[in-house]
Amino acid sequence: MQSLKSNALEPTRFDLAHMSNGQKIARLLPVYGIPILTVLLIILFSIILPRTFPTMLNLRSILGDKAIIALLSLAAMVPMMAGRIDLTVGYGIVLWHILAIGLQVQLGFEWWQAALIVICLGAMLGLFNGLLVELAQIDSFIATLGTGTVIYALALWYTEGRQIIGALPPEFTNIYMTQVFGLPIAAFYVLGVALVLWVVTEYLPIGRYLYAIGANPRAAALNGIPTRRYVMGAFITSGALTALAGVVLAAKLRIGQASVGLEYLLPALVGAFLGSTTIKPGRVNVWGTVAAVAILAVGISGIQQLGGAFFVEPLFNGVTLVLAIGLAGYAQRKRGSVRHKTLAGAANAPAPTPPAPEDDQSRG
Image 1 (tube, rainbow, N blue to C red):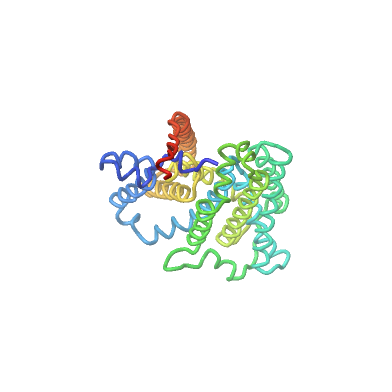
Image 2 (cartoon, one colour; image 1 turned 90 degrees about the vertical axis):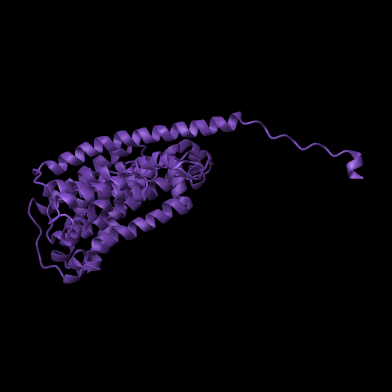
């Protein structure tokens, strides 16, 4: 199977060693453009808003508020590796945060039991999505849109349009309220999940198989990869991570209501799509997704502090999603052209000259 590095857009150390400083900058800017732009935005807003933006309070606010979006973006990223999309990351969090509270205040479950049940249910929903996509052969967009709408309807039925309120143990609310080194613990959830996914996707065969399936499912199957198993595993992972985000959201809000959650769908997809344009351009990747969520968080926070209207955030997310999909498509086409040139170069390369046979005198 062809190596993923053979058609990468990001330069290798060998490439950089043979470039001038100007060429290095030209090659690295498209790869690390979003992280660089994030840093520049932080500097810009810090200069414009010196009293409110570069503060620990603002940092804690950004990390705490966007941690749930980051978890959902990482959840959406996993099926995207296999060329699928999971819209239940936005619909599922509605039901999961309601159940995380309802199981405690209405059915008397312990907080850890409620959290575990919700995560298991999220994984089961992911399994069901995987069965629809792989066994029933329904397009992943349609399948997850349908299941997402159903579970959203279940959330409405369960709550009857009312809020679910009750006394929650401090151990549960501390899932979100705890601070580590002065920062919200939710940010460390994102860091932990990102590290695990990074190791799995970059250093284990699972990640290479998912990328291979996303690039060409038929070729992956012909190479002996059990595509059905890995795609279903990707949906299960996405469902479990979505449920984890729902538990964190429940600990943050302390009330369950069906009107909360759907607003996370768009920024979660924006983070995943935009993440495929940086760090590893042309394919979704962990740190690209984290960087994409970071630039969204910084940009929205700065604009709001400058007096942006209430509609700025959805407008910003919508425009960014369109741009992200366009850039992702361009990066994938670019990667495809690199792959084509690599294969063409290999096909046109001269065959190696066989060694000359030894004559009788040389043997003697």
